[in-house]
Amino acid sequence: MKIRNSAIALLIIVSAGTLLIAKNMVLTTPDGLKIMLKDDNTWVYENGKPSEIEKDFTVPVSNGKIILIGTDGTWGYVEKEIKDEEKLIKTDSVVGTGHSVNRDINAATADAQKQALRQAVSKMKNALHQLEIDDSKLEDCVKRVEKQVDKKEDFKQGTGWDVNIRMVLDKGSIFAVADCAKKIENDSTKAAAKKSKKK
Image (tube, rainbow, N blue to C red; front, side, top):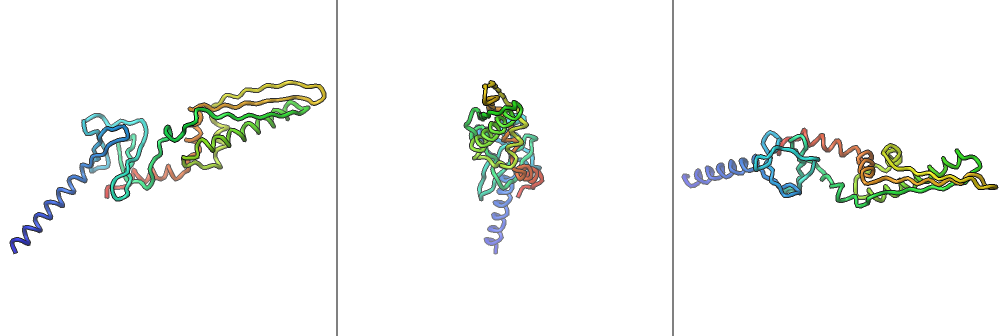
């Protein structure tokens, strides 16, 4: 009977130790820093450095679980990993071109702009293919972001206005489009993580 009671006591001690370790779980960030997850769903660097990061990130842990580390100093479980856009978007620029000839300069310009936009959206889709993007938002997002648009027009006797449009989106604009066209579920995943309690 004493042996059994000792075994139960040992099991309780081991369980308590396991809970204590779980409360003070230490994770390693993608850049190699160690962070401690607190019981109240906040986190701190193990070395006492303030809880400051530039963007949210996820860390896969045991049992297929994924932990979200938030810029606001909180953490929680999520179902999907956050993909590092800087590593997944390898394109430095996206260029769309359009060409049209018409006796009406406005019609030629509008047609060339549509072609350039269509081509830029198509190339953007390829550049962002590793991210969870809502393709139906891409065109509107490309229209909204800052981009360089060059226009060349020349009047040719007998044919009308010859218009060429070149639309260039740099790396910053590509990231802006990626952010604009993200699927909504990413936002709900983040919100769910903040509400989640440690399991």
